[in-house]
Length: 409
Image 1 (cartoon, helix red, strand yellow):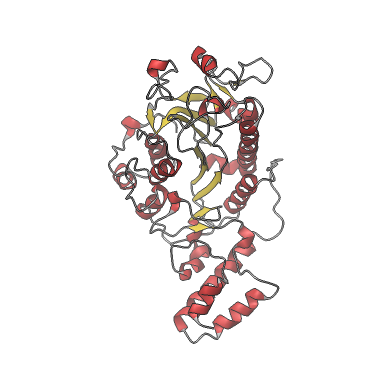
Image 2 (cartoon, helix red, strand yellow):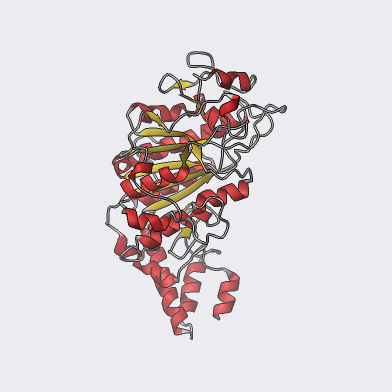
């Protein structure tokens, strides 16, 4: 079997690898090293932050959304009160216990100062952390991995539970994208793994044979660490949706002690131009899946949550006023959620600009008062331990420093 035939056949499900398979064998060296964990979640499609984190204390919110606004706390289908002004959408109620115990915080009116309303561009800018610059090669998480290199080059240090590599993890540092942990191996019928391994053992190409042997060793290591049916802890009940199952896989890897430091997952279908709904409907159903998945993950991690930050993001928000189709069009400012043991919760952070027409961005959207990089940078510095000079390499052309931090951690 030649190298070309093997690559064309796609026998190994080592998806979106940016490094040589020989590094995989080093995974075992990273086991047993307790480290901080960042779990990044991207809500693709631009979630409506005004209905997710409801400014029920703002009269203009209700004037602008006659059919899709979330009622005030206490009413049927009303928001879950947070601080007397903001409330959670009722379908986010599974996250309320984390607010009460101080591990959930919100940053509102947050986003990019670039005014694009393109999903593609806005996602690219947020994942590269260079708003307005399309030429950036690496994602911000990958740049973090580059400037804070791992001593054993562990490829399971950064894993995306997605079919393709997200922009945030693309770059020169080793990262892995895989749909499911049990797919990390050889695809094919019964005996396919043994057949490929035997073929590589006899390969005339010594380099190919050697790296393949290490790759098979790494697969066995991971399978050994995650063998058997996964049983969530502490009564955690994950949704059966792709998003819920991805979060379960992240918990599985985090608790398997394979050196995981950054995990990534995504939730889609947030682009509700038509029939968005209020307390019920399309968006409510998506929020239900989102909230139950994150609540299960946080509960399942147990004591590990003390060393974890779960960070949600979306490319931009929605217009303040509902449109003629009882939906919302592309907007600007939005809400970011953080959950973790070191999070200073029970607070909605960031200056609130208000929803009066004269206070809106371009007369229609929630204005941005907090740069999303203020949040990302604080997580890197105060959670993952990056120093200021190193952080400047992760966020080029951005003045990283405590003066920009909100005090989230």
